[in-house]
Image 1: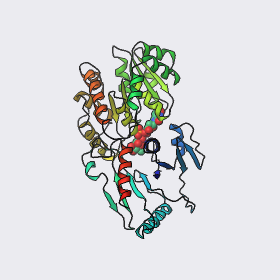
Image 2: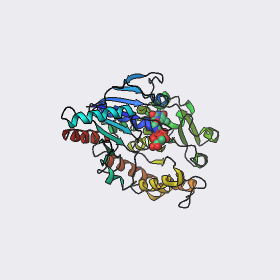
Image 3: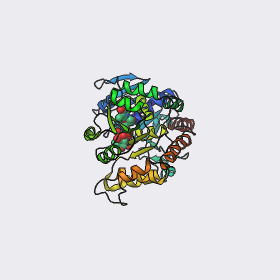
Image 4: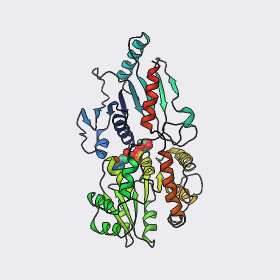
Length: 385
Ligand code: TRH
């Protein structure tokens, strides 16, 4: 199966983060020949060492990567068997023209029209199941299928590589291996010593509006020691809030497999957006998700839809709500972050949250992942052509 995956980087890293993971998963799992079109190679290079932001074309991890430049070019390669546009990014007009020509040939029995997929953003909302794989008939005769990631068997599922749990469990079973990994990221001796002495480890990947000062202040005053791992550029003012019981360790942006390992080393992961959120679920550890903020507070409805599915104690859900409230947000009364954090980190809530995180990972891992579901869907659609 040959596939074209189009990715337009809106902002941050999640658009390319999801697309890069999908491209590699389809290449390495179902064995598709993947062509990944990316408009912003700089964001890509930030999360994937080895990407050359100046290259018009390059190969990495078995994926053919094309710098998607909007200038019209008549030399576009012919569309693959499957064309995936991520997050409704609209492929180039000339490419759609070529798809239409293939559809016309197919109608004359002379070829096979590509399957056109629109990969949607992840949502936990109930309506997603009803729209997953729905066709959208265009005026030009082409049909586009909506493919919705999700948390239930009636959705497209979530990206998950085979063997992930075994690799995770091996690292989580050895504090020494975790220490070696963190040292490899440049975590200093004092922080590593705190880690070896059993400090509670948090990872922090959030948007600027997150109440990170309240987080640091709360952790500073707890009886146990805490180590917070923070990627460079995130929560810039946090380092000044370190104290006796709280150490802040800055880590570089790393490739996605190492970002997974960072999450696996933490007892509690503060994540954001879409892809790091899912990867924190795969860490099988407690997580606090900061959803991508949207105007009018619609993101809080999406947050609540997910919280309704998250089997953690109510205290942990209150903490997630507090983490996502910003000054002046409408909606439910803002739970007090320090109070919610204290309660969530204290037994028996903390132990119940840890058990729930483990069970949720196992539940979500039980079915086929998004790449396998997409491959099955496209194979079935091609049979009908
Ligand atoms: O960067 P994000 O905020 O991206 C967001 C979301 O995708 C959101 O859905 C979208 O609407 C918005 O962009 C435009 O968060 P996310 O989704 O977690 O993507 C971050 C990616 O960066 C993820 O794939 C993990 C990766 N990453 C690394 O690979 N290494 C790192 O060191 C870090 C910090 C992140």
